[in-house]
Amino acid sequence: MSSAGASAVSAATAEPAVRRGRRAVREADSLTHPPRTGLVLVAPAVAFVTVFVLVPLAFALVISFTSWPLIGEVRWIGAENYVRLLSDAGYGRAIGYTLLYTALVTGPILVLGYLMAVLVRSRRRGTTLLRTVLFLPYVVGLSTLSFMVVLEAQPGSGAINLVLGALGITDGQTAWLVDGTLATVLISVLVVWAVPGLTMMLLMSGMQSIPSEVYESAALDGAGWWSQELLITVPMLRRTIAMSLIISVIGSFLAFTQFYVLTKGGPGSETTTVVHYIYNRAFVQLQLGSATALSIVLVVVVGLVTAAQFWLLRERD
Image (cartoon, rainbow, N blue to C red; front, side):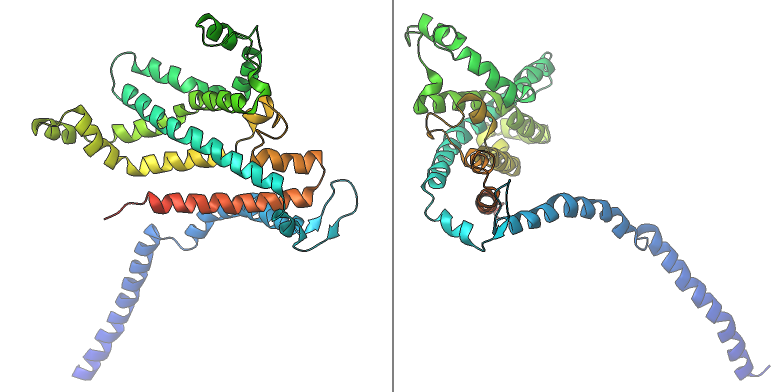
């Protein structure tokens, strides 16, 4: 057989081998990255976000440009609802009060949650029960706890006044819920008692993920407990602390239940938060268009505050 014929035969036999090799490579790739599998896996999440987030948000944006009286004719009024916000003194007071309330509760929630996490992060006997007891107020929820406080804050008969009267702090007849300052103090104490359980669980899980060898090395170098907390635990929990702060701040900005149950925003409008103000505009004054515009502004503000927190608490090299 000539060299040309041999070359042709070898080429003919090599070509199927090459094709088989390419097919084998494609099949091997498909085991780790099957075609269209990624789209199939992502599709339910995309559909969920589209149906329950993007579509309602787009519909709310449309409503905010209308005069939607809940009962009656709907009229397109453009940006009039947003223009009115500039002169809405009630909305400004609600924002100011919400910022005050956020400033009052955010720090204590973080500090108390951290101390609780330090208390329950070990695996000593009884720690599980203690975790349950400390986390229980958060599980019960602010709605139930607020109704309990309504009863216990009554002048003369509530447990709060009875205890404070027995201690000689008050005369036992304090009307906590009809004074703006006292009501704010009472609600803040309630939230600082009920909410830190979540912060405790988040920080505790982060603390337990820190290798014990790090603390042992620090102890051998002479670092005490306080130094270990400041130089090891806090820096290694930076992301968890940031997440806890963001959750706490967002929750405070969106506070509604405890104020609605305890004070209805009163006396007058002294304890009216932003969400409560929007609720009144929508379901008391029956102005859905204006209320939706207020909600859109709140969403933007919360987004900006969250972005600022992410930036301030980001990891720095």
